[in-house]
Length: 103
Image (tube, rainbow, N blue to C red; front, side, top):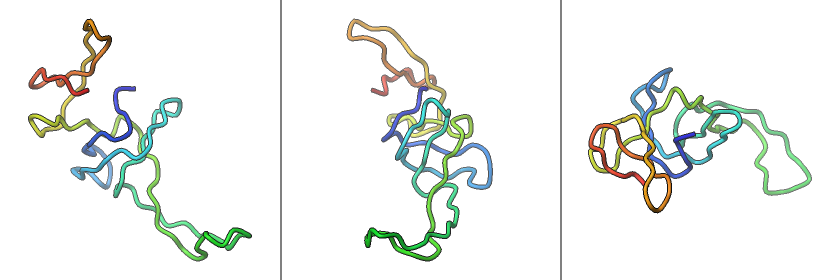
C-alpha cells in the first residue's frame, strides 16, 4: 500500500470529498486507512470496569477505503498519484506530478 501513517491525504470520493487530513492508522491487509476528521460516526459506548472509558454516545473516525483517498505531495501541495522508484538506498515513493521524492 502506498499510503502510510502520518501522510497527508485528500478524500476524493464519498460524503467527505475534498477534505484533507492526516492518516492516523493504515491497515494494509484490509486496504483501509483511518484519517483524522474524516468519516465521523457516532457509537454508543457503555461503561466498563476500566474507569477511563467515557459512557454515552461518542464520535469516532471510521476506516476509509484506500481507493477513496489520494496522497498530497508536500512540495506541490496537490493530490497526486504515487510512483515507486528504486534507488541505491532502496525503494522510495515519488510524486507523479513533480517527480519529487516523498520519503
